[in-house]
Length: 146
Image 1 (cartoon, rainbow, N blue to C red):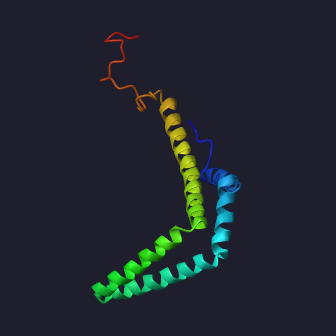
Image 2 (cartoon, rainbow, N blue to C red):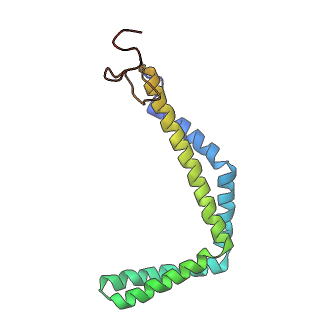
Image 3 (cartoon, rainbow, N blue to C red):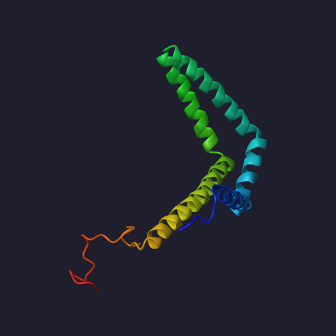
């Protein structure tokens, strides 16, 4: 069997699929949610505080200041809880999960389709997931040929 497609052909089709995905409801919602997050003053303030405390935590950890590190980590947790309680942030996180789920669906569909094609093109058994007939597995015909 000769190859029908090159890597470049596949990359081009992947780009086309990516553009289709970029035009889905899930991605559109994600973009709107991200825009609102970026424009939400309190969310941006909390993010800035978290980043500041994270830098401080890295320094404290580097210098072995365990008690001070615990206090800073507690402040980070408190800020993270505050930001997670904001409905807009919850919607944004949900939109991230929805887009990721769509990407996973595409990936799994491609993987399963390729695997199924390989199995069937080699005369294999889709139910068993094998590419060739296993002589050790009795298919109900016994030792005689069916």
